Length: 112
Image 1 (cartoon, rainbow, N blue to C red):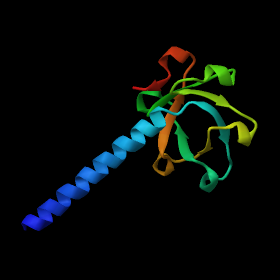
Image 2 (cartoon, rainbow, N blue to C red):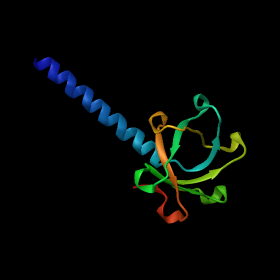
Image 3 (cartoon, one colour):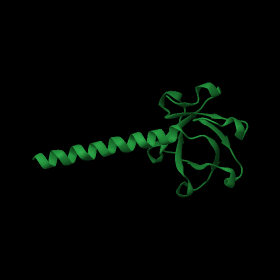
Image 4 (cartoon, rainbow, N blue to C red):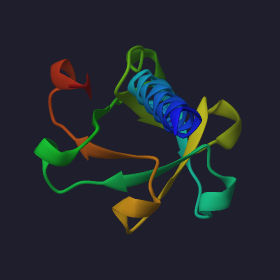
């Protein structure tokens, strides 16, 4: 019984650590992003929320790559070679790595 409990606790700790690492990863995403149609070719699969309250990350579409210099500020590039990462938009939240909501004010960009 003791070994089983220890194993369950170890698995839980690994799951929590994995979530924290993924969370910090997408919170720091900034710079040029290229949208790919096939989710298997994307660095991240993203779901676009209709409400900011349910989004993991608030994204501001930067008008220029120079302005996309902190987490949540994305410049959508038309050139894949210029992009720091790629995303594919998915229709179901369960298939996404994280969810975003587009905001109009760059001050509020990033994770909550």
